[in-house]
Image (cartoon, rainbow, N blue to C red):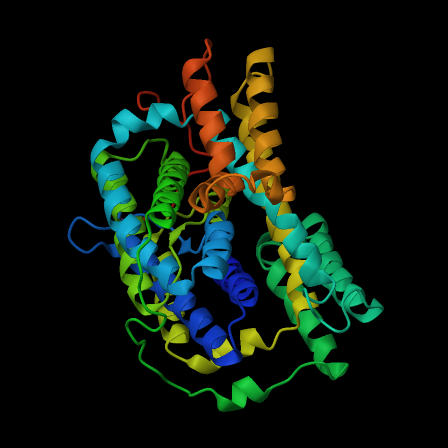
Length: 425
């Protein structure tokens, strides 16, 4: 459950803070990302027609969308964010699911690894800002804020390094819980939003409105393409526990679920849903590949998502506590991308130049956004996204520079299972 809840709520918390939502709107946003993470997970496990893979895929909101949702939300409003998600989430995953065999060769580990790395790296400053108390906080950088963030960070790291099994998997949730308890003891938690929130509420369509602009649409379209390829890779990793690759129907169903549940969720105010790679490691480590276990987790999330008080509790967590957890999460994202590169590609001159160029430009537009001030506003929005710049540069250079890089997954050879899988079908 910690794998399913913590990252999604962190994304909602970050975006809500950046666009200046009040406590009630933030509570609703958190409630929706929990609810539709559960819906998407259940659909992946059990399917609805052609939508869903019938695999134990854990779904949630990806950090890949944070930059675009924040920038577009601040500049154009959340109505443009949700309008763009609705359209892009239907069109791109449908085309990707239909033509994924033709498109997969354009996204080898060199490209996908770079994208994962930049997602982690460009969000590190966000984690530091939250650790210091949040931008604009009167006590920004105070010893108390830094101490709370350090405690959450320290507990998470120690549990990951020294413990095994469920304690390791729950390390971030335990770190946040300890930090939250300390913050309550220090008297810095306001429970007002919790007492004001209802015990049960049905989601409302169009809560933030819908508007459509071409550049945000194009931006989210590219991000959904990246998200779809990540889901393809995750499905391959999951079925590797059985020593096989996903079937065509599993690929298409998984990608369709990515898009269509994201579109439906956006109608009610939820952010895009995509597969969580952390679950791939858990399945291959344990050898347990039961979709029913994941489905039960999804049902629990649906129930929690219908209880606004749960979302309200998340909004009361101090920024510094969340900051310590965010630093670990985004750092692990970057480390996962590095692992993807180092295990799958040769570090020759060609690949190193591509890595250097893509990461250099991606981090460049993130750290010095004014460098694009001479471009039209639409171009600033599109090329100001580090994920897009890094992905495009990696994609173009890898496609047109002579030389080869490993495929995202092999469609002919099977992968031996790490341990004998326990399946339910």
